[in-house]
Image (cartoon, rainbow over all chains, first blue to last red; front, side, top):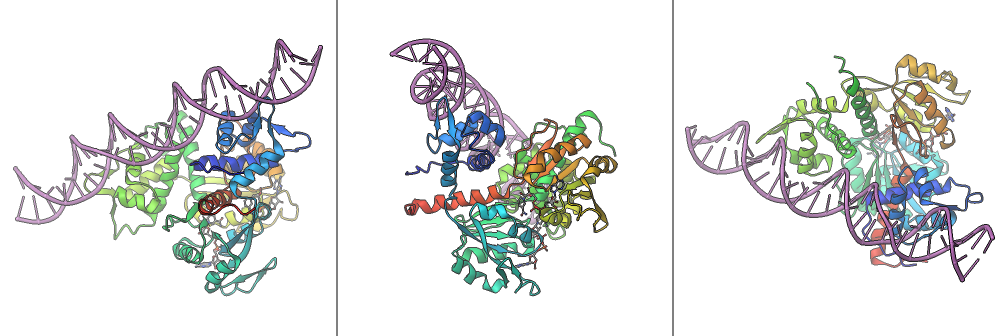
Length: 219
Length: 219
DNA sequence: GCCGTCTTGTGAAAATCTTCACAAATCAGG
DNA sequence: CCTGATTTGTGAAGATTTTCACAAGACGGC
Ligand SMILES: NC(=O)c1ccc[n+]([C@@H]2O[C@H](COP(=O)([O-])OP(=O)(O)OC[C@H]3O[C@@H](n4cnc5c(N)ncnc54)[C@H](O)[C@@H]3O)[C@@H](O)[C@H]2O)c1
Ligand SMILES: NC(=O)c1ccc[n+]([C@@H]2O[C@H](COP(=O)([O-])OP(=O)(O)OC[C@H]3O[C@@H](n4cnc5c(N)ncnc54)[C@H](O)[C@@H]3O)[C@@H](O)[C@H]2O)c1
């Protein structure tokens, strides 16, 4: 079971996640195997892309048959590192933070928010489903005690860089960042940004472009 | 002011949004011009990339000087289609939906959530900051009345496809989708997916990969 | 065992995206 | 006006990603 660890592109990894999601949506009683074509349809890509992506990690399919759903799920979980529990520290118990905390799908995938910190004294001490919100001073201790390597930043942009550095100093190596700011951290730290304004702006551009082909822009 | 509308890649557009964000973070009194190098630093890319991206839409800089902050902001807003107001319909007044509704940055950029619908009768009729939550039956009328071309889907995956179709039938052409499912809509509709589980899994993969270079995987 | 149908895995080709490198332009100082 | 220090805009080169196309394998029916 030695995974060979070739250089894999980010887009491939992101698609693997989509494949896993698609596979979990299948009824593996009714549909025990799946072809690359079907998987592509479910994940929004092409059959060749599916096969190419999977073939980087092994030969999981059978020619003429396709891929067995349950084993492929396990391979994907294995590749993505989901065959373990990932303790996560959440920084910021605001609107986004609370939505994420209550999101059941994270826990189902092994991402367990085991600690929450917030700067607001009014929030510190509250319990969320058994997890007590703690002050930011407790962050380093918390990260170490929980052995958390993943953190979620859900605080205003002004504080994000400092908080990120605190997380990294305490041992965090991966950050999901909701703050609208570019974090500058050591190259061994992986940061994934969630930028919803950007997503809306991409829609805006697409629509504006489509409209303008037909009619002039109204002053 | 005829923008030439060349074929522009998605990644370019997404970077333009980052450039705009970076420019808005600058004090244009203290720093009236910015070089491609500095902008790249702020946006997390390379100077050549910045110049290439911008040059697709015009020559906004001055050689030897750089780009004037305020005018470049306006060019970017113009390109992205942000020189107007975008009414948005929100489907799903749950955890994510309410966080988005209260997110001030959307409105600042022109994305104004003008209507909210939810299936839950207990939520229908409530007022959120002046906007009344309406039943799903009202959706087609609402979309047309508000002339909304953008929609946000913040409901469970099981209902997302049907709701998306309802939005599109009523005139929506761009959707920000939080539901963990691939939407299948006409090719004239633009869908941007937000998949937070995917983002976490990408972090998981990166960390697992980094760890395994040093040590074997514990059974 | 053989045939027809299906589907994977994968090199090669095509397409796309990023980086390089440098001429052309701008400005300050004298 | 000329020099030197900058920085843009951009074709060409390089790198990466996606698509194509097909040989090789798998299975059911007979
Ligand atoms: N609400 C949204 O829909 C949304 C969407 C996209 C991005 N974001 C971004 O996510 C971040 C959080 O947004 P929100 O809407 O949840 O904000 P919020 O104001 O509701 O919550 C922020 C929380 O962080 C806490 N906080 C502030 N500084 C802190 C610090 N230094 N350490 C610890 N806690 C601190 C505050 O006390 C508050 O509880 C912001 O950067 C925002 O731009 C939010
Ligand atoms: N909470 C999170 O942090 C989070 C993170 C990522 C993705 N998501 C996704 O976003 C979506 C919403 O998540 P949430 O946590 O806000 O859920 P939620 O249960 O808090 O809210 C969902 C809301 O949608 C309403 N609803 C259900 N079906 C509807 C329909 N057909 N039409 C209109 N309204 C309907 C419900 O009444 C409820 O108010 C889900 O698909 C979820 O997987 C949530």
